[in-house]
Amino acid sequence: MYLIVYRMKVTAIIDDDLVRNVKAYTQSSTVTEAITIVLKDWLDTYNIKELNKKIIRNPVIIKNGQKIREINRSI
Image 1 (cartoon, rainbow, N blue to C red):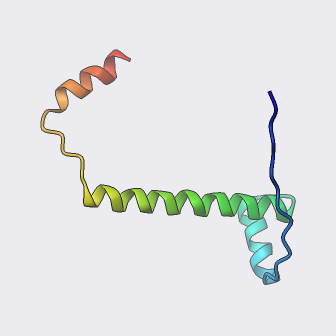
Image 2: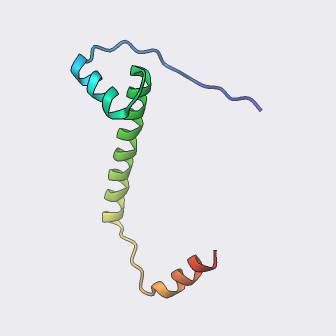
């Protein structure tokens, strides 16, 4: 089995205070790790917001939750 990892080297001009705060809040030892954590967190938040929009447009309506509870308890 082979694993191909793609990485991108990026040069960006980012305010020093912003980078320091991100490193502090993420408790990261490197800028790369801190920015990676923040970007993943941002994507997770974005995806949750998009999912919420879909649910609002087409909500799941459960008329009888008893059957679902029984299935969940049997697992």
